[in-house]
Image 1 (cartoon, rainbow, N blue to C red):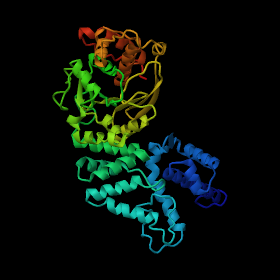
Image 2: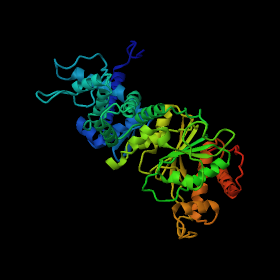
Image 3: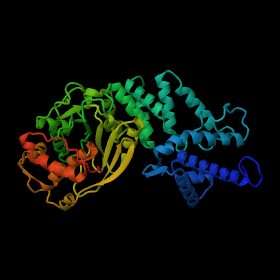
Image 4: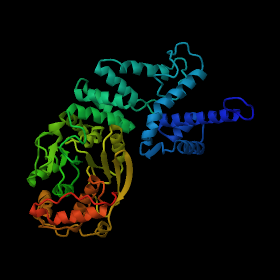
Length: 489
């Protein structure tokens, strides 16, 4: 009740305040559509300082960062992306009610079920269809049973000009990627979809939908329901020339009693390293993987469990840039492990995969930033670990004082000129050479994996465990899993 008037309902001041809040939503919508504070300000006739102030108010109101600054502009957070369709429909309906009368505009029910993708929907004479018309046509295409027409609608949705596009929701993304994997469309559509997606930037809801489609098509066990404990994707670029030291780290983790499954390219250096060291290279996701009674390390080529996705990965040389499949592959988890530890380049969006794992309802997913395409600690270099465990999101800085000390270590020390790349790699495990930086990489990476696997092992305890495992490695013995009482990262 309004005490001043004795009437039930909001006061005039409260109503004005609500109207001001609605104005905030208009700005929110403009930033979502344009992906740029400057472009959104131009469309709304507001200066950059004014837009910055409003964005701060929005962040304070929703208690969320809302947008992440990237090389592709402002990228919405998971929370902001979930609000997008509601805000776009609300603002579009307001524009429709307040705009000039258009007899030929498609009729709609409040709120618009198919809101336009662009901000400006006023249709000038002889300038073509309005934004509402275009949204209606795309929706009609998207409801078609013909996969070619459905994919055309998805391409139009994500691939239009700036300010006339939107991300796919999770259901649309799953359908779109099922179509791509089904080979029911023409090749030019596949290229157009992947390039449009890469140019605009992928959202975590799209990655979640793509991942669901790829895992379903390959018939993979749900995370936590398979035979593996730790999923370790290893899709190294052919241009990566360093030693695959993370494999030695995984050997230590398996020596601790965990079942570790790596997966990557059939023709990549990781598979060649497994064969060189006579480690198991398996061909399916069931009986050939380590069992509860047989902890160990195995490698599974993507060609054997997801051949359709591998064909899309082969498109890299034709585009000379990564595409969506390079983000999907590390999320396949063919062994159905409860825990995934993957890597992402420092300039990428490591939270993208972690947030997609949240949407998929997975238990534990960890992304280490700062190395090429695989989880490996780099001595002397600070790296971010983005961890999701049981819905809780953490960000930790990874590094050690010991690693800092070897930053300037002579990389040529303890090397054999008569060894090739894989011979040097194996010689480190055999103890024939002992480069300090390489040993630090192996031990720190193993320690990181052990802390991600265990909810109670601290990084200091994991380092000590890794040292013990390294000392015992040549005896082939296994060390029992450690579950101390201190907290994890």
